[in-house]
Image (cartoon, rainbow, N blue to C red; front, side, top):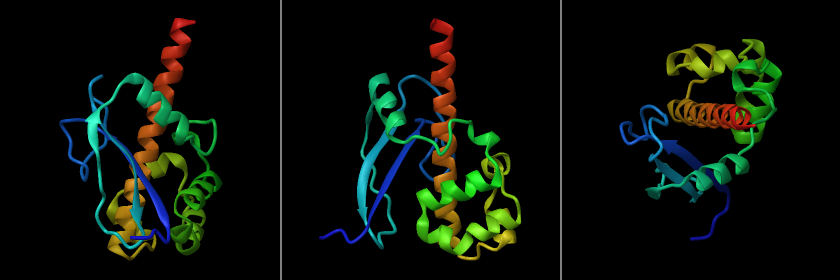
Length: 156
C-alpha cells in the first residue's frame, strides 16, 4: 500500500497505563512505542512494544526536539501555535487562530481537556483526540527532556 502522506506516531507508556488513557514513565523498565509509519486515513495506531534501554530513550528524545529550548509550561500562545503548525499542519490551518484567540499557552495546553477543546471551537471528536494525543506526547517528551537535563546537571 503506497503512503500518500506519512505521519509519525511515537509515545512512551508505562506498563500500568493503556495507550488511550495516561502517558507516564513510572519505572526504568517501561514499554516504548517505536516510531511507525501509518498511511493517511488510517484510524488505528500501530504500535510495536519492546523493552527499551536508556540509549533508546535518549535517541528518541533527540529525534523529537521541542519547539523551543524552554519547558512546555513556559510556552506562550505563539509557541503553542508554532508547535501545532509543526506537528499537525492540517489541524493548525483550522484551529491555530483559536489557540491565539483564547490564549492557549503551554501551561494551559498541558492541562487542557476534551471538553475545553470543544468549548473553544474544536468540534470534531477525532480531531480533538488527535490534538490530545499530540499534547500528551509533547508533554511526555518535554518532561523527559527536563529529567535528562536535571540528571546531567547533578553529575557534572
